[in-house]
Length: 273
Image (spheres, rainbow, N blue to C red):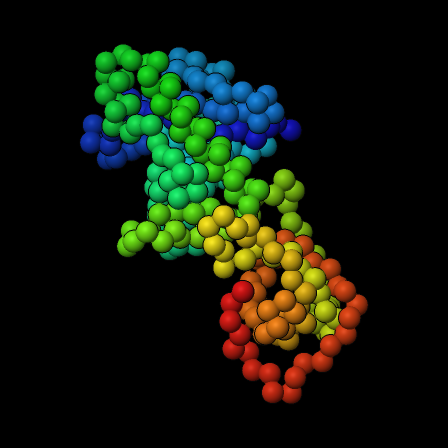
């Protein structure tokens, strides 16, 4: 098994310079990566991409921002295997899933890390035409560092933030990027059995109700009143009220063996937790 790699790249051309806006025609000027196993930043020019191939082929996970739709398709002509075989975590996917629209790397970095990008892709294109590869390498690795810091922050705190297009309010983006994978089938089974036997559960949960600086990971004790995937509802002992929870945001679950009864007047209209 390989290691986790953060990846970003810069191109030789922009879309207006190639036929049909085809990614594979843009050409690579520089690829920048961070290797978690080696704790090392590296850059590769187009002529050096053969050295990158085994790292990507054996990678445990390749992390990036918009790499599914841009970086990897651009890189595909240089790889002797399909990019679909690369295990990928694309940070923009979590943002779109939560917010319903795309956000920029700059937006995430400003709101989450308090700092932004050091340049732009258009400037990197100009540097390529001028042969200033050292500047492209520096800019590319700056983006790799920002992407790595976003991933590390999300992994530690269970959330990222984005700037809003409508004001100063930060938008919350819950994420779940664990070192180990959840056993979702086991979580669903324990939840169903606890509901059937009326056993209170203790859950570690990724909350959507997070303020800036707070962790999204919460521990709650809940009497399960109803299970209707992808949600379940129950009495939250911390909130002292009936709440709605998304099953796919449960990080861990265990029964407490405390029994409960469902109120006769219970109606599934809970507030989301």
